Length: 362
Image (cartoon, rainbow, N blue to C red; front, side, top):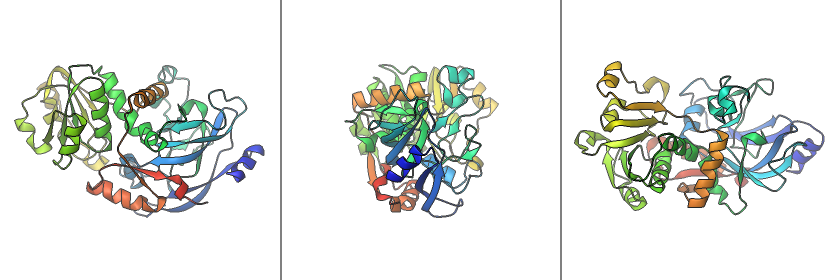
């Protein structure tokens, strides 16, 4: 990183090396680029670990919208601070830091003022596949790379004794599931069902159990039933069995990234129950809910949830570390990213893939 430190000293753009796709059908390959110069309230992070999120796949393959290519995905980032701007107060060189799904927002709207930056009225600046209106609308590049420059306000503090390879996925999978459970005020004795038992679902289960809920799981098969029961799940249902479910739930959290029938889950809520949705299938197959589905499941609430604000993200991280709530992870090298994508889309993946960025050579 000596080259980058010289660039910081000279107030120059920061050189970076990452793994990128140059179209929705291409494989990953080495990509050299530059990041904006270190601002007075920015920090430069040497990325040590980057988690792979299913959102990365949707984005890389333009399944939500046409992507900005070349694209360096990755919004589950953990690393070491190697330079700080002149007015930075939150970090010093040598600290550990994490970066999640966003790297900036307008900072002026009502959402930003209450630390709901993800709902910024101007639009949050996503960590990758986004035009950064704070830096001449240049495209953002994510965590499958050796470094990142980010405002201190959009990085979370990480204790030096934290397991960084497990911290990285918390910056998306953790906050994405923690936030709706808090929003629905899940408490001891509540019955909570988690629909989908991938990387997000597993985190939702861990948080809900720690909050004192009686937790159930809906999965597309029973391949992970043993793991679910070992985690403390009361029962795992195959998604084809919803008609025989006798329980009624205070909350259902859907992490499903593929087509499904929302109404079938609404029927399983108690009167006054809530369904939070965080899974986002590809646009052409995203599920819909009609007026009848709402009226005939009246006085039940359904809402969407998008990650969490920076204040809540730090709260989630502190809660996770205090209670040793981590994702099940498997370390891979940058040369295994394509294989990891294939495993995730075919259902073969059992754990959260995390890239060891030391495997990326400049």
